[in-house]
Amino acid sequence: MHPLAPRLAEALIDLLHQPLAADLPTGAAVLGWVNHARRAIDLPPLNQLPKGIPGDVGRCPLAEAVPGLEVHSAYCVAASPRARWLAGAWGAELNLDGRFKLPPPLAAFVHAFDAGFYPELVER
Image (cartoon, rainbow, N blue to C red):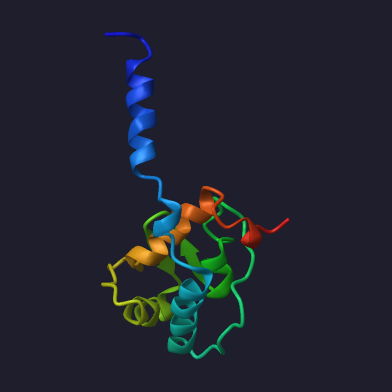
């Protein structure tokens, strides 16, 4: 086997997991999900998504929009009193440790944001 084969295979697998620009949720769609969750925990809706920091679980736009939320690549962790309401608002099942899986459009948003697809939402 060529010495670069494992690295090439890993790079190709990473490419398969990258979202295509056409598959990305719009900012308006993500804002709709965010505001649905905010209403579930008695917060007023936002007019726009907040800016965030790619790769920072506590500072992505979703986490900035919903206090107490940590957003990992495919799941969220919420402060326990709010976790049940947030999971319910997004149609997710809450685990005993307060984690719940992000709905596919929000998971796609998080991956794309971390990959630089929403430069207008990056805090500078």
